Length: 299
Image 1 (cartoon, rainbow, N blue to C red):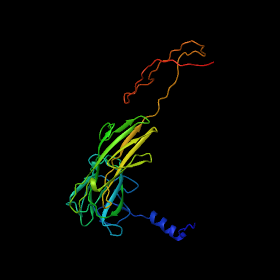
Image 2 (spheres, rainbow, N blue to C red):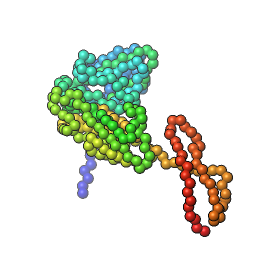
Image 3 (tube, rainbow, N blue to C red):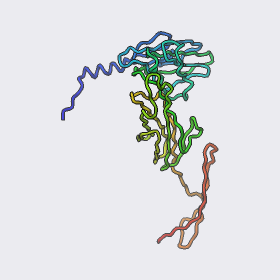
Image 4 (spheres, rainbow, N blue to C red):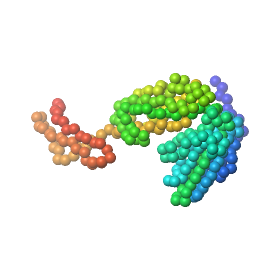
């Protein structure tokens, strides 16, 4: 079998392209691009400035798609500072959301919708003088015209505690039932879509996946896992949010024998063993059930 290799010059050009992706600093200057990064005024080296009042419009250059998409790895803003998004070429366009609508530090996607014929996004940012955060950096992409899809985690068994931001706690070998639905606020604006025309793909955080709006998954290994859901409609448009449901699988109990135990036992001797929790932590529920039993030995 012949393996075709890229010419050295092609590899070099690819590396140069990746290394020179442009970073656009939010300073009010319009952006026309389908690549690069969009960041706060501090760039990659520092926080944004106090008392900022900025508006930036980002439009596609039509090289890879017709509508702008921004992928945020997370946003760090101080209380009172607002980063908001509008579905058009100025701040009078329909509002999409603000960064405060998402859990702090988590990834989220903002994209121009199919009803927005120009495909532009407008971003506004306001900061006060009471402290500045590290800001943000968003990956700029261009996608086909899509209507909005929002993934909603309807219920889980066991439930997450607390319901909106909490963990689902289970023991190794136990399973979790998931039920989800899609929200389609622009259904019928350009085309019709619903759960019946969409596919659901679950990612359970341990390398396994499942299909369908409902799923059941067993976790065998202790650890922490993040469950994500991808909803894709008949035109390949995907949900713009991450459900990021956290699962915590407990470790196995660790038993130690302590106290004055006999160094040896003879046939028909009896030894009493008792169990207790050595350290009580009010943030965890720990219980010990004492039982009695016997076992046979030889020799």
